[in-house]
Amino acid sequence: MHCDFSGGQITSDAGLLPLRAFDERHHLTRDGVQLLSDPRDEERVWHDSLELLRQRIYQIVAGYEDANDADRLRHDPTLQIVADQKLGEALGSQPTLSRWENAPSARDLVRLNDALLDQFIRLCGEQVRQRGEILLDIDSTDDPTHGQQQLSIFNGAYGQHMYHPMLIFERHTGCLLAARLRPGNASSHARIVPMLLRLVPRLEAAFPGVLIKLRGDAGFALPLLYEFCEFFGMQYAFGIPANCVFQQRAESRQKQLKRRYGRTQLPQRGFSSFRHRARSWPRQRRICYKAEHTAVGTNLRFVITNCPGRASKVFAFYNDRGECENRIEEFKNGFRADRLSCHRFLANAFRLLLHGFAYNLVNLFRLQLPQPWRSAQIETLRAQLFKIGARVRQTARCVRFHLASGWPFQNLFRSVAFAVNSS
Image (cartoon, rainbow, N blue to C red; front, side, top):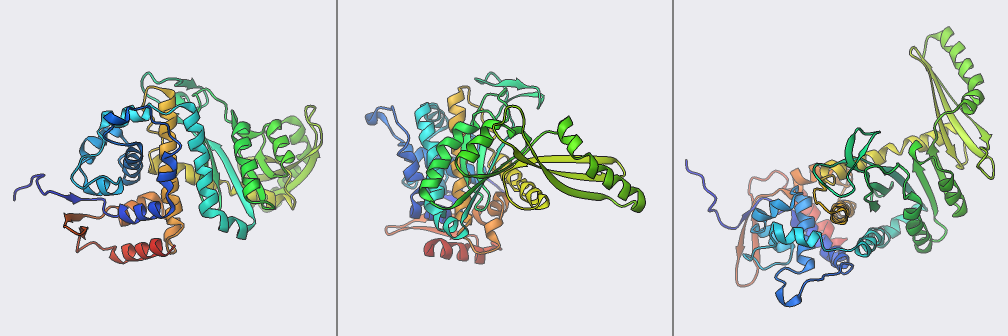
């Protein structure tokens, strides 16, 4: 038995072709590249920005998150096809990609962030109008840093040097609507109001009459954020830390549950709400709380909200924001969005958006798939759809991909190709 790497034009990622067809149908990457300025001399450019953008995004989708991977993958026939490069001509190398990633300005990054919202409005607009609701989940996440990276600062809450990105997802579609890279010492709520100011008015203009809701954990218990939501007529629910006033208002329910537990020895849970006005607030606001009593003692949770309905219903709505954690986990671990290893802060902010575009491309693509694939995670899609071995052969008329005969997910590939072509 003898093995070598002289097999020629063979690829392990032929399943990216339906994704590229979806991209071409809705011109997602083509629209995105128009927002990037390119300071390079046109006469000396071998790889234009559209080719580099597609090469980088499809590498991330395929699981190759580092620019270093391009030194080998630039010869991969599938990546050459999806990047619209001639078959057999190498794509951009790692130094080319690194220079390109360091080129965008802060203004370019703002426009790219707006493009995430544009994609949602254009491709998910019909779903939003039928549902009559937009549900925004906001959260921050940690991105550990290594080396001398700009604005990599120690964060005491996480106990590490890091960046602190802010992310905004739409719950029903799973789309990423905004992503902002922040220094490591930024608080959880830092810059959230400016981000929403770019988001909410455009959503209201695109979907008049559609209710917009907002959720966040206790890190977003910010009076300015409450006033923002009330000004725009949004419903909100945010966790809020307990204090002596809140605990006093919940004391009677807490004692009641304690007595009931003493009689039954069964875990007890109760919900209620009250109106409260802090000194800095212009009006009273509703505080819902959940009281639990078990063998380990009493547990109290508080949520500030303007949502109607019973307190138990408000808590069910608030607890559903755990789905946002799943989206962050997929974004960080599935798409490796925490691999921000450039030295310059702006370059890392651009990298975060590249991972955001890769996430949204796959997310919008899977929304067109047959059930149950619409909820499939990126690891599942890679294993059962994108990672297909194939031999690539170019003829005078076309390029043929001869997929592996023993591949067990052939019916899935056919159904996906049909769904993309008919969407």
